[in-house]
Image 1 (spheres, one colour):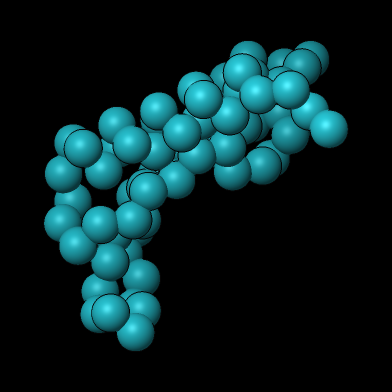
Image 2 (spheres, helix red, strand yellow; image 1 turned 45 degrees about the vertical axis):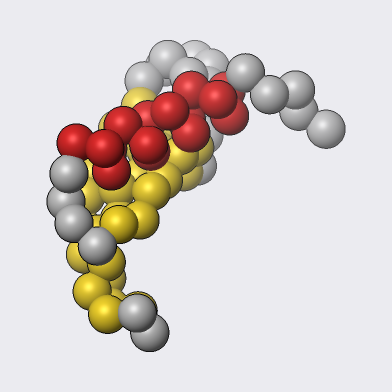
Length: 65
């Protein structure tokens, strides 16, 4: 990889919060090593993953300040 947004990786885990157990789906840019999208939910669903991916897609199209 030679630049951002060439390859992403994703994973799902669960974490303890003050609200109880929540699932976390995250999308990471393999070049920059930054999390470019994430989503939290009480249930592991396809919508959880879609929300994280949609955030990543939206974030890649934003101008950098």
